[in-house]
Length: 84
Image 1: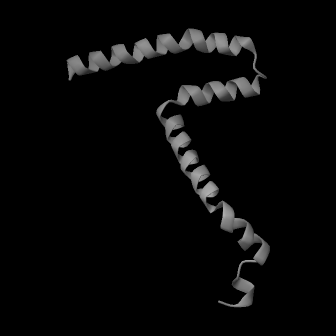
Image 2: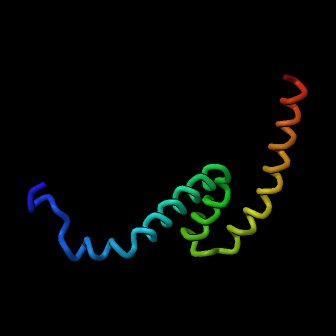
């Protein structure tokens, strides 16, 4: 390794003490990404709230639609189980 390929001393000193923090942030990012894939409604609600500047109509709409969507998923799953 030549001198041009080495990490500068200030950056190397900085990363010595916080490598575990970077590791924890990476693990949490992966975990929250998996949660967002499993339950996309939460991510969609957060996006809708941030784009509408937390308009109460967004929360009301989500509160009205979410239970209907959940019951519909359960009923469709039961019907597919009976048919198959």
